[in-house]
Image 1 (cartoon, one colour):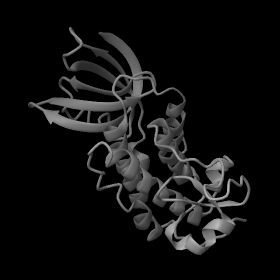
Image 2: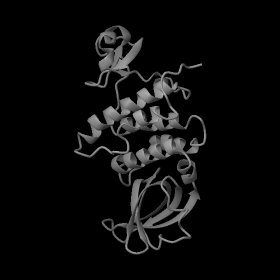
Image 3: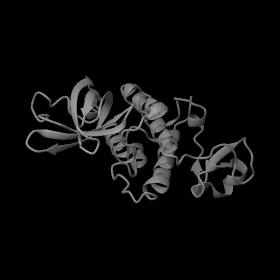
Image 4: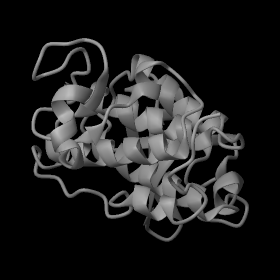
Length: 248
């Protein structure tokens, strides 16, 4: 087996005196894990950082062997995250979710666009919006997406305002209002492909994805939900993304 690709570093584990077991998420091959010989050195310190975009070639004598990786830094994103505590928290969540959920050696196709957008817009005001798209479409990619097409109670396709935690289906405003404190908010900005949501909409979306990723994927597969992702929305709301703002 021999292939080349590019991918973002999502996990690193030291192996031996100078080696690293490196995990990346790539477009053509999904999650790729392999051994990098001689990675631990002062020269390579800036290369092997979570979030950095790496060009790599992977090789194994037989398919069952761990891949050997040869890597070259393509884009250093680490500095954008290390300088901002909120961005670092979100990067850690991204890496943990990707490491747990991404299929190995499988083409990510269209979903890779949302991964790449998160990193490409990390220095823009909309960076958290792009991360929220990643989490929402991660559910769809994993086959545990929501049904937002019509109200589960009435069949209405208009005035949808809530999501049922039991079914993952939309609920219209009229049917859902009496139970609004037990329902999640409908993600209008995702459906409308709007990249300028309010802070409150962002926090609501992260609450929504946390619940359904845990319920429909992690719990179903008996996997531990990443601690760094749990309650991320609450952590962010206490910092620079407070709720309650109105859209201009």
